Length: 608
Ligand SMILES: *[C@@H]1O[C@H](CO)[C@@H](O)[C@H](O)[C@H]1NC(C)=O
Ligand SMILES: *[C@@H]1O[C@H](CO)[C@@H](O)[C@H](O)[C@H]1NC(C)=O
Ligand SMILES: *[C@@H]1O[C@H](CO)[C@@H](O)[C@H](O)[C@H]1NC(C)=O
Ligand SMILES: *[C@@H]1O[C@H](CO)[C@@H](O)[C@H](O)[C@H]1NC(C)=O
Ligand SMILES: [Zn+2]
Image: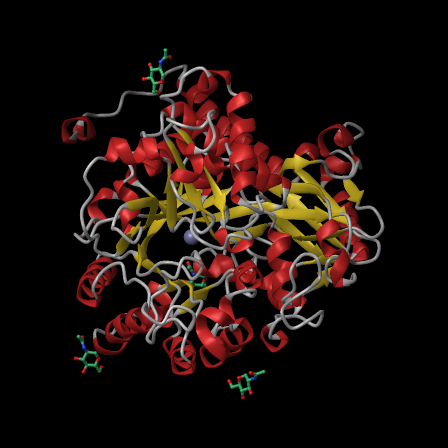
């Protein structure tokens, strides 16, 4: 304190020079050491990947295709030609005194260049801009996507029961899974609780199965028994009933929350999370925008982040199914955790249901169900209050909108905030998730307002078989209109996602669907040229949608989304060139390596 300062300094002592030299020289030496280690990276920290045919697609406008990239620690340190890389390495050898020292190579190492196999390519790490991590893991317990009839669903459940003795021997254990889709069955109708009762192994068991779009739950009679008396109506949802008013076992949208499924245990959550991470990395994903997680799941992910157990970048939208403002229930996390991979700065709201279950909210009745126009989950007033409060509190607001009514209502709300309250679009970056069916005026309005449309190309190719019968020939013109949305976008942003587990996890399914508008067997209602092919994207547009545009939609375009020096070293090595090869072969592509933060997270890089 001040007393110390006024005290006369002691006279020179025999030790003072030693103290001074130590206090000056040691830091100096340390500085030199730091300088050397900073300038001359240890061999283990830097490596380069090259393609002799120049097939490294960077999604960086400045240098779209290069021969080599270098990675230093967790970042890209160089992109360019092989010649340029050699000169760069040579220059270092020549310019540091350490290199003339025989021991230098030991520290410096040889420049580690590995060459990808001929035909292979490198692209930036792929992002899925809309997916459901935990639900996917949950669903992978018992998957029903491949079932082509109710009988097949029953058989799949029986196999599942027989292979799980704990469930087999305890008929009170819940059986849960998902992926059923009545549009793929000869029956076409919604299934019923009674369908389970015909089988002695299933009769009496609590069973709850999610529809493929997660907008309907099909339960067994045992579950109906447990549920007891049901409300007559559910706002924003519905209970399917027979002609005499008895519930048949299918609950839509908001009514799904009536089903008393047991809470997930911590152990289950860990399993669901790890299952999804593993399969996602194996397909080349390095970033997932999770489209709605509860405070409990975010808490679980936060603890994983702290323990360094999140293997890729997660951009999680908080979600609470409530019409009362819930912003305070979600923690705000940016590049959080040991590896800085968890971000929670956005929230998800749901405005309507899905097209497959006639739940999408339309401005006019369904063409194939004239007594219905779908379901708005909440009133426009409630949605407006929620969106406004989230905007005020600095949350990015991402709203699920399928039908043209849902899109219209939410665009009205965004337009008010942007046009009247002067919300800054580039700072707020509001998103419409799905943006599936829009009037032509609203497609134009989305562009004008610079609202981000976050779309899922596989929804177009899954829905194309029935979408036009639901919507009719006029409305279909504004549906799944990806090219129109992208072309209109002032920043040329169209983030792409899968909505897995509604669709497959493999991002190439989306890439293929976006560029071909064909089902995986090469067909479409309009033949082999694709369904409304004028709305197809080019390969470059699709790749950018799965990388840089998704990064923009998550405020990380400065850090990820392209192979650019200074950005994170997230990239994928594919065995073939998806940017050039025939469309019909794309889905045979294999991932050779998925790299996150410069480290291999799946597969292997070619040897040096
Ligand atoms: C059967 O499962 C139920 C529900 O999970 C559980 O409460 C009960 O303890 C189980 N019974 C046995 C004998 O394990
Ligand atoms: C928005 O900006 C306009 C023009 O600059 C201004 O007149 C208006 O008062 C602003 N509105 C709000 C709510 O700040
Ligand atoms: C793209 O948008 C521009 C205007 O922004 C328009 O002139 C052009 O016709 C559009 N192209 C397509 C293919 O829609
Ligand atoms: C990205 O960098 C630019 C230029 O430095 C900056 O203006 C912008 O705010 C950054 N974007 C984000 C999302 O941080
Ligand atoms: Zn979704």
